[in-house]
Length: 320
Image (tube, rainbow, N blue to C red; front, side):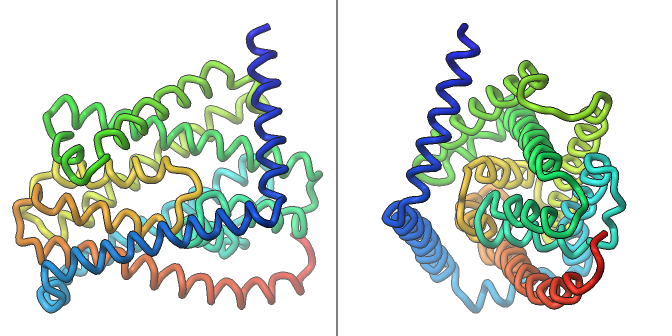
């Protein structure tokens, strides 16, 4: 009875949200809130970087080529792994559609969280010979498992930092960080547990598919964390490893916030507040973070433009 009541309450909430989202005034209000939040973050960034000194920041951009190499690998880790994931889910070869998964990443990171899933669903309905239900279920279930892996990584990393005494720096980074970390930790733990407990009711994947997907998601999450830490270590090799783990934990915590506009810029603003724990000049840390954010924005723009051209040629071909 309790489960039925919860399912009905969730269905009612989804229907209410759907109706609200369809109203033009609600859509306008949401856009205003997103742009206002982004404007506040950009203003905060300008203030922080001005205090460090713009010339000092620009003069402290990472010189190590390994920094840029690890950035490229981290950028590609998500689309490459998602090709493998959706090949398992849909039993189709998808490597020739690599640009679709690049564009999906751009939408999620540069536009708004989960907009990439909407793009992939629309593309798959147009291009793949699959029933609509198969497409929707595949995207939904894969997204649930992706969130499970990210939530689990957040819980594990925050727990490690708390056990080693490295979490305090993140809590002191900016006002409200303690609440943010606590909420992310608790919500991630609860959501991970719910996915495990109610996996048979939440997902409709064929038998034997879920373990394969979880292994890919888990491996990707570990790889991205290692590449992220290696990228920072290449830029500032003298800094303690736990400092970089704090930075990465902050990024994971922020990624748990749904519909966050432009995650890269938001993370830059939060990470600048952690520069004191690195043990390096503030300008050097700011230069590294600005280079990372600048590369992210440049890659997102370049990949969006490149995939727009490929998308036009792709739609002229016969369906996969």
